[in-house]
Image (spheres, rainbow, N blue to C red):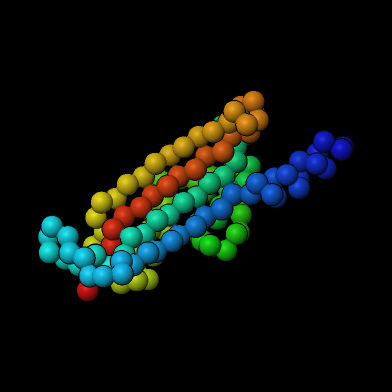
Length: 129
């Protein structure tokens, strides 16, 4: 029972997280299409998996930046990142999103490939007035 009791606090310390960050330029910048750059939106979500395919704990994209987690659900997906990105673009009233980039990263060597961490990064430039 002791190994399980130690696992719970460890998972809580390593809990997944969903974050959205928006950075506006200090001066007006224009893109090739002559639309002003409103801001750069960056989204990150990560979670932990048993053997790389059984979700244990991950960030909850419905509540970004609130340190809420989702247990035993697949919440670390590109679609969830795109949803968080679109929600933030609506919030700041962006007209268009350009230069969309995503990256998926898997790491498991820290636990001899028993527990894996999946991280998805997504960013885009938001255009608007």
